[in-house]
Image (cartoon, rainbow, N blue to C red; front, side, top):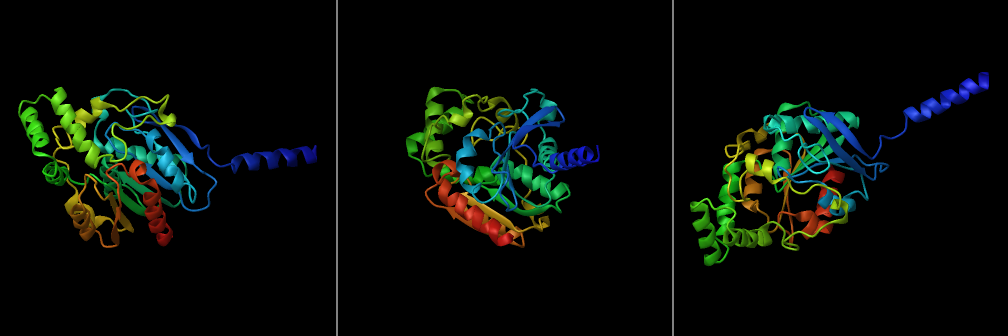
Length: 311
């Protein structure tokens, strides 16, 4: 009996020390959010990825972030209303603080002691708010990837990028925006030209990733509600969002990174960098906003170099 009790105790201890599952769901206000950890056994500090949108999903970035997972665990999760997470379709939850709470829920569920936090595009707004409003002692560093940190500044950059397109494309966009005919086929064709230049230069329209075969598509309803009809037209609840003047409060090592042809201009990254004491800027060559698609190798290399230096 004595040896049986010892054996049972050893089994119990082993179970207690098992790593948290690499995929699952977490309860948050409004429903459950899905998460996945790539290479959970890696020894380096993990990095949590907060995806863009609003309304995007993680599945189309798994392939790109797998390169980063060669060195450290990469934590992906779908925000509420996105991807494999619940879709309650409740507009009362479509507010920035609720998305910030989801980052905290993932960190708490996975019991993260030290981790890096990366916000991509709209995810940058979430990460900025997290750093400004939550306890951040366990955050080793912050990475803003093509980040939305100010809607007015984003729109300024978009105007510059639009001016680089052909005059007929510019005229078409101006015409149908004035008419608010955002679903007009001529307008959609013109916006595709913008996306092919600055969103994803390698693949537009985006390819269908195997990891996305059973995942709900982009949630255009929350995107339109919070942002607007296109990447360069903000009409939703985020149109006045601006945290530039608060970036100086971030006291963690910080990286601002964007593609060479990103929707966020290099001079905008430099403006952000000037506000954060311990920060730097990196540019991924031959890439638009979708760096995990356009140049995942260089993107992963620059991210890993930054995080390794921090550690």
